[in-house]
Structures are given as C-alpha cells and as structure tokens.
Amino acid sequence: MTEVNIQAVKDYLLDLQDRICAALEAVDGCAFVEDAWQREAGGGGRTRVLENGNVIEKGGVNFSHVYGDKLPPSATAARPELAGRSFEAMGVSLVIHPRNPYAPTSHANVRLFVAQKEGAEPVWWFGGGFDLTPYYGFEEDVVHWHQTAKQACVPFGEDIYPRFKKWCDEYFYLKHRDEARGVGGLFFDDFSEGGFENAFAFMRAVGDSYIDAYLPILNKRKDTEYGERERDFQLYRRGRYVEFNLVFDRGTLFGLQSGGRTESILMSLPPEVRWRYDWQPQEGSAEAKLYSDFLPHRDWI
Image (cartoon, rainbow, N blue to C red):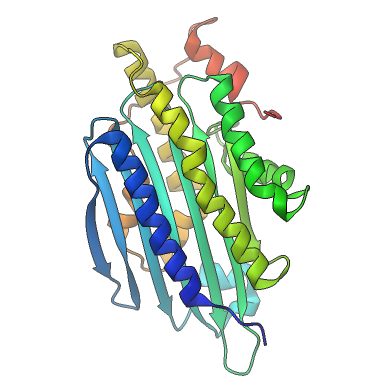
C-alpha cells in the first residue's frame, strides 16, 4: 500500500509559511498578524495577514489543514472514486498586493489532498504553483519570474515547466473578458508522478522557489515614484483579480462549498478596487502596453 506521509508534508508547510512571512517582513518592516483558528467539522489553520504595511498594502500567507468524513458533492461529482472516503486537505496559500502600482501582485499555493477508505489504496495528489499579476509590465521581471519557475522544474523532467506553464496560462484566464489575469508562472494539480516522495519533492521545489522569484521584483519596484494615474489603473486592474477569484478559482470554490473559514478564503481579495463601464486604455500608453505586450500568452524564456 502506498505510504502517504501526511505529517512530513504538514511540517514542511508550517515551516514554509514561517520562512515566507519572515522574508516579506524583512522587506516591509511590518509584521504579519496571526489568527489561529479551528474548524468545527475538523481541522484548523494559521491565517497571517499584513495590512497597511510600508510596502504591502494587503497580504496574507495562510496555512490550513482540514479533514472530514465526506466531501462536498462538487468534489465527488468530478471525481466519483472519492465518494465514501474521508479526506484531508492541507496547504499554504498566499496573495501579496503591494501598495506601489509598479510592483506586481503575486499569488502562490502548494497543497496536498488525501482521500482514504479502509481496505483501499489512498487517493492522493499534490497541487499548487505561483503566478504574477503586474499592472505595469517590465520584461526583465517577467523573464526572471519564469526562469526561476523553470529552474524549480528542471530536476523533475524537461517537460514539466512547459506543461505547467501552459496549464497556468490556461487556468488563470478570464473567459468572460477573453483576457489573461497576469503573466502566468506555474500551475499543477492532481500531481502524483513518480510516487509520493518524488511528487512531494516537486511540491517543495515549487514552494521554496517562490521567494527567489518574487522578492527581487518587489525590491526593485517598491520605491518607484507614481501618481494618481498609476494608482487608478492599479485599482481598476485589481478588479480582474476579484472577478477571477470569485468566479473561477477552484480553491475559493472548494473552500466555500466545504464549509471552510470564509475570512481566510477571501483573504486573497485586495483592499481597494475600482470598476468602470467599458473603460479602454489610451492608445500607445503604458497602460495599453500591459494589454498588448504582457497579457497575451508568450514564451518568456
């Protein structure tokens, strides 16, 4: 029978949360506030939030470990083999919304799902990835982001980065807008290739590379001068982030449908957003360049 070392994954995820928070606190100068919580139906977590920081307008780095006797119908409809099994789901999920419009929003998530039934092989998989959502594009930033993502993937096979880069492009896409949310990165789910130890090692490689991918960009852009025009565009584009998370995001939908903690699930939403009717950027402007040069899917390396 496949051995699924849940405790080893949990220990790693708690340590990853600590390391990411410490790295971001060193950049911002303010500390995350921790909110430890328990889930009545089973499990709990540590929600850590930084609001109104020097660099980060709102950021959250969450750990959760939830379990139960049965999955919501939405999960078993997609995966009938999970019916009648108990489940455990754990992960670290984070979203960072910087104050400066020239500093991009970033998102990362690594997670394990296990469903068990007495006398049967456990059903398990890892998922996760990270993606970048700039408001003003800088090619060198996006190239660095994707190079770091590729380096994390290389030890696990030459096909891993192109597969999961493509999956990320397709996943973080607003179909109703016919537009990408950002410039992508990595996205993977249902990953069990090479057995538990190999799949766990890959998940760790992705989790460990997030800070290497994001901090150089954040440090480079956090002090760039900006005005009301840039701020206004940032808040307008944040609306796309909200639309994706509430309409398409699997993690948000699973969390809400499975009775998860709403405050933690919706932590990813930015503090200020603006919507306008049929707004279009001025031709040739820096804002228009985001749409023409950065949002269309590209091979960045």
